[in-house]
Length: 171
Image (cartoon, rainbow, N blue to C red; front, side, top):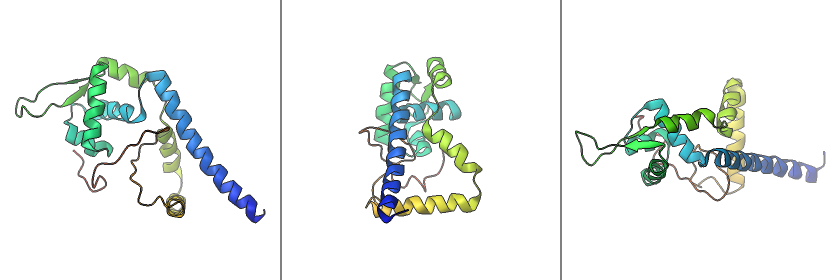
């Protein structure tokens, strides 16, 4: 394989990844009307039950203002409910509605879900090799310091992780 061909191969692989994320995000949005971050909020609420926005933010590694905005949209759509806490009036935990659960059950799988299932089946050495290679690609693209969340989304939507999300305790 020629030197130029090697460059083409890596750029083609990167473009395929970007395109796959974009297409899966569009499919989710078309079928549910939800963005990937909105869908992940619903999934977290279905999995964990009623949660305060701060705990939800830590759970899914998104900033609290982003989570609050998502919760507002999901409430308007009837997919969640928010009720004032009896012990703290400032807190309004969110819980998924029956309609929200129905959306999750009938939605296409997120790209990251299928990827993580396959990735976890790989031997440890191969997982570490892939992580190292992708981190190196990020460095080569001057993207090492770009804020990123573990949520794969397409389009222009930017999702930032919560500060120190990796060290935040699980609520």
